[in-house]
Image (tube, rainbow, N blue to C red; front, side):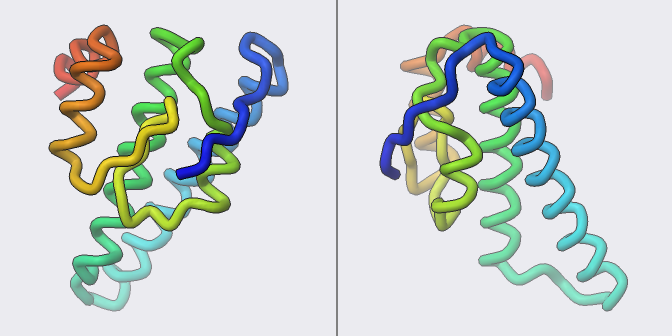
Amino acid sequence: MQKTAAPKKGGQGYAIGLVSTVESIIRDVWEILHTYQRKSKLLPPTAAFRCRSLVVFACMGELLSLIMPSAIAVSMSAVLKSGQFTEFYCACGSACPHEFDLMNHVRSQHYALYKFFCHLH
């Protein structure tokens, strides 16, 4: 993943961009799930992986913006536009092939976020 500079922290444009990115991810994933449910079809494994990757990216980005916003090193909207989402992405710019690797990254690099995320389950 290429690092694309995140918008200036603390500004209204930054907050609006983050919220609209997260909302678009959630909206798109729900639409995919509803489409497959209406057709009574199972979600293909590749689509399920992509949906999970997108939702984890959105959750981690949102939580990172609340707990340690200075750790966000990429524009989430730019990643959303250019990312293939065949990996798990962190808003700090790291990409991991597996969710387990992402959680190891979060635990080692963003421990406060890791603790907070674990208590949400």
